[in-house]
Image 1 (cartoon, one colour):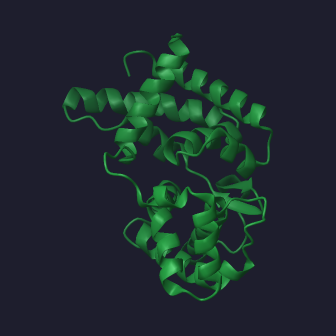
Image 2: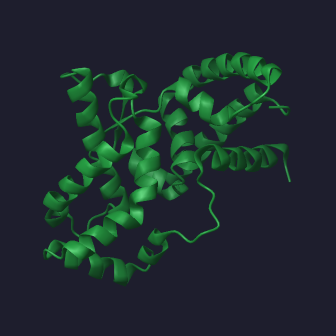
Length: 236
């Protein structure tokens, strides 16, 4: 195994701990991986079946919450939390479910993720009074923008938590170095790290979201990992 592959595995493990993504219990969304069953559930929801709509949303709720937690502007802490956005997203889904067709190029979860992302953008604009789009705080994705994960929050997630005073001091210094490296990255490369590790999307899903070739998504991902490997070092 190459050193890069080892680093990628260590990074993935660290991110699972940081986000609470790793779980021994089967996820409800696993029941939605069967394409015919998923299509049937969507059709029931489109026909006004509230139980089917709730099952669809609940099946992906954990992944949506993780996405929102990562992208919710830090200035809104204490005023807005992910549950507020999720509630709004569910209400929006109930109004928009008719517009989704199973024949669409965009898989249902990615479409639902976009619905939730649009709700999060509305919360940002409403509470931060940003009527105009800030291009530095959004990433252009399939059919619309999505709030980015800022380098401060991403660096904190990558480094994890340390308890001792010496670890805290080392973490503060490392965080600054990592933030600088993240800021120097192409925004799309930084976004790919978030999508692959924190949102747990496949390389194909990342390519579809960002509207780039699968090979380009893969090469950009490994380029970003190599950059992080250089900054974080073997002891971090």
